[in-house]
Length: 79
Image (cartoon, rainbow, N blue to C red):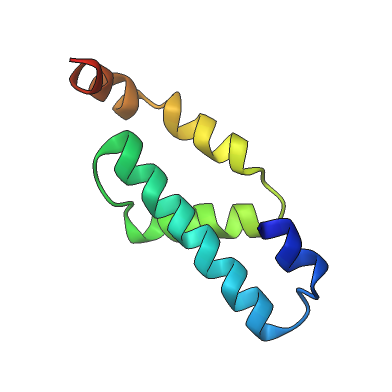
């Protein structure tokens, strides 16, 4: 979906706005799913900016999945 938005003319404000909404939702849902909480406003803004400026979604998810917070929560998720 993100690549379709990019191909459709990301130079338009509406396409950028839609892409940002999608990326924001992805970041929020990843935090809820893996950490059981919403991201702090600063972390949300930082992750959204990083993804929108070239960081991969995979690297973002990996950073959460390898965090100490996630490692601490893992027994709860598995148990």
